[in-house]
Length: 301
Image (cartoon, rainbow, N blue to C red; front, side, top):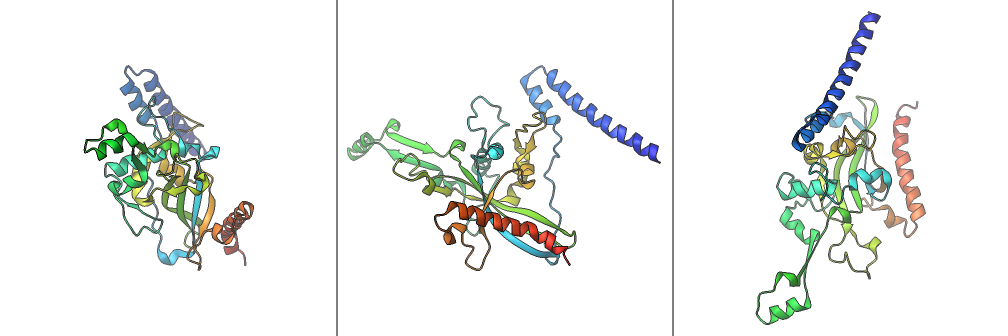
């Protein structure tokens, strides 16, 4: 019996090595760029569909806590959510998270888009244009307009929010203790890109820290298949990229809690710890540690 298991292990390892080598060989032997791209996609180990969530009965949730977190894109570990911002010289398969979201909202593939994190007011792409684009007319354009003439396009300035303008992501999720499995688990509910207000994005008189706004909120379960098909550069193994869905569900990022559900109307930490960044960070860590300790407390008698 022991020899059988050893043989099975050898076959599995050998088969995996052969598959990876065969995929790499196809890339090296490609005659055209299209063959190379097809070979790269065929060589990935990602499943065709995102891994489905297991069913959780409400009676199995012994305890839960909903938290809002901010992902700062200035941190190195969060770079895969930000780059690439310049896509002119890159293949179409490599896009930032913001570009993936906006593209699918624009073409109608992603419709579960809302104003806030409570997902009560829905938005279409046409409704989002005011927060994603600024259109301004120069003085010469106003002169032409007052004279009853058609304003030439060169007198109209357009400023679009791009991936390079995204500074943060806000995420909403729920930690819960599954008494059936006997473990603490996390489920991502929604996310929102944060950028400077497009109306004041180039205004030096406005404080950049006070000018950040969430552009829209996406109901995450509806975006999973879209994010699964969008790949992220894998620094440890570029030949096997991971998907945005895998990266977010595995929490391969660093985030800070800025709000938790509470009796005060889910107020932010900054609303009761005012103008003290250090104490706000300590409060965020306190909430995080309380959640982590909950699982340990469940096994204490």
